[in-house]
Each structure stands twice: as C-alpha cells, then as structure tokens.
Length: 107
Image (cartoon, rainbow, N blue to C red; front, side):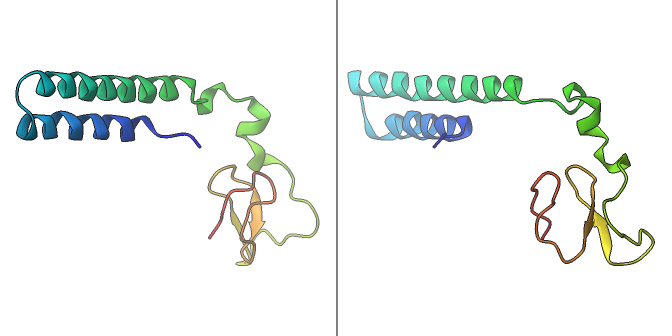
C-alpha cells in the first residue's frame, strides 16, 4: 500500500506544531527536525509522483482517440440507451456499471 505524500506532510506539520506546545529545550528541537523531515519527505514524494504521472498528451494517439472507433455490434447511436465513458470516451450502454474499454466505473 502506498501512502500519499500529503499524509507525510500533514503528519510533519502536526509533529512540529505539537512539539512547539508540548516540549521545551532539546526535545523541542528534535521534534522540529523530525517534523521538518516528514514535511520535506512528503513534499518530495508529491513532486516525484506528479512528475512520474503520465500526461494525456504523451499517450499514444490510438489510446487518446478511442471514441472515434466504430462501435461494436448493433448500437443505435441516436438512442437514449447509450452514453460515453468519461475516461476514454468509448460508447457504452447506460445499463453498464463499468466501461468495456478501459474499466472505468460509470456509476
């Protein structure tokens, strides 16, 4: 299980703020350092996750424009029985809970 970087940053802020009110002297400095380390680690983790996240423009063209594919089977495009997937724009039946193309939850 991966922990979001924001959680680390929030824990760091909590530790640093608590140390200000609870501890005095060397203990306070130690908890400031620990809180600062958590904040730094959390922000770095958020930055790395953002950089590694695939961008829409970097995907292959056939993955970006799947809605332009011909529908499979008999589909009455003008009817009220169909809609488009919010993620991949594939034509899906209104009764479906998940997209047949990308697996996104539709309801």
